[in-house]
Length: 235
Image (cartoon, rainbow, N blue to C red; front, top):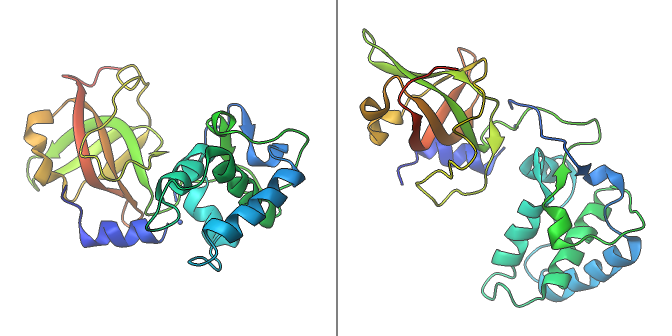
């Protein structure tokens, strides 16, 4: 996959565009129990504390995971931690660690324990509600791919609000459910889309994956994948 150094830098420091999908619960609805968080604190000490002393609380943590499902945090922890021996803990131990992380971020507990399946329907948002997706986040967007014939630049027009994705290693896009998605009102410059043979998708309704790049002269997407959804841009 071709990703610019700027894209990688942005991915490391998220902070930008589009409202979250708040269907279902949010982390502020009491989605874990205090007893579960206490177990998670012990599990964290067992599996994680030798490498991690901080970084799981505050604005930095929230910016990394907000406008996404809680399942993304659970998946990241369960697939990657502890370093060198990922997957050594049980699913219940990993989800308890997620509950502990919520608790140390002063997100209130409730009466029902968090489960991996429930996390798939729980949105991570800040205390003040949904906010724009952070600058530098990896996102999926649907729109119309057009070229300025004079400047030879490419633009995604009638674009939908960006939706966060964590599938950074894949050069493909999961287009299931995207073909019928209504077009939007946003426009994004595509400075490095040339690597993905945009001429094969010119004038098409497309799905594009890339890193958000907020610029004073207009927002951009640093492309990591491109796929045609329809051969025209009819609504």
